Image 1 (tube, rainbow, N blue to C red):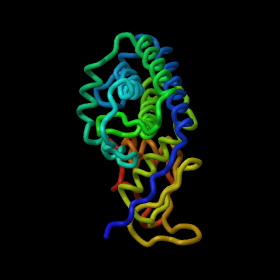
Image 2 (cartoon, rainbow, N blue to C red; image 1 turned 135 degrees about the horizontal axis):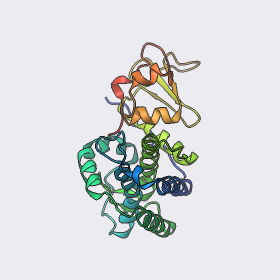
Image 3 (cartoon, one colour; image 1 turned 90 degrees about the vertical axis):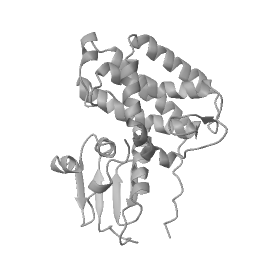
Length: 262
């Protein structure tokens, strides 16, 4: 009999709405400060240029706008813990759409997107359903996924441009927690404790479960390293070799379970 599904983590909807807005603001400031030639530079995301990445970041917030501007779906089709795994089903489509869009007027796009987001989200019910690529979700859940999109691609932007782009604390916390929970969903169990201080602790991987004291298998890393591992920006071996991950115990190797999203 499969193990019972754990209760989904709850998120403060007001803090999440504010965090999404704040992180997009950090992105907007960084993108609009770039010299024009920097927009044609490559990124670590295949064929994407910095301009493609900047457009995709705007689309991450724009998807909320489009969802609220359109009709409400009839029923909920996707739960928040299932979103990270679902993203792998649309990798090619997202790549194609992003490179086809390549916005020419980034200042206008960012201003319009941010303005409409603030306008629409201010009066929206968190239980309202919105369409997504992977099925209808509640607005509250979908906004948590936007923290992941924005935080992950903020890191991509910083890597591509050499710019120090800030991470909003609440956005980073939510992204870390959702991806940690995705690991626990992918590898259910209690043999390994994964710690990402100060934001998340989860137990995962089949095997003997500890009940008290220090667990026999412990993995600990920082939030950005965890996010890079969870999204395939770095490998387990690379993070271990760089001393970005501490792992102790015979089961404390997460290679088989990473990344947790596409």
